Length: 137
Image (cartoon, rainbow, N blue to C red; front, top):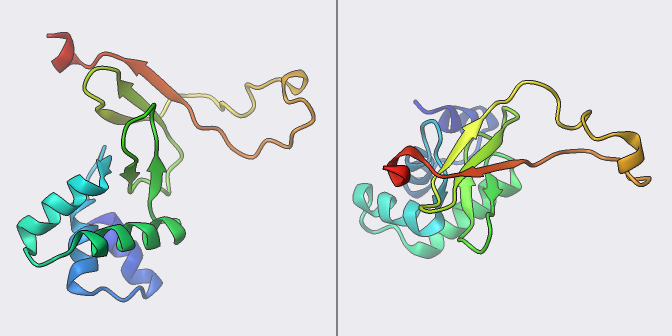
């Protein structure tokens, strides 16, 4: 069972067939699918699932804090089920592939007080950019 599916069961979230399929599609490491990609994969498992159901389910999972929305440049929003473990992203500028990365150190503490301009800083979102090995080949 996927980590996401397990977390949803522990929360007591009602797992209809449609919700289960969306959660199953999002299982695994380095998963960053668009809503359309989630829908395409979900219809392979449950042909009658509607696009609206997928979008609604993704919205509910984001609201629950079980999915992160990842927006890069002007590309479609992607959904990241790795919402529990702090991480950053590595983005291929050519194909748009996104990988989760876990650099050492604390990016939040790396911002000096003089650069916070009075803000109470509560979080950091870093995106490393480059060209993936497939595109480089």
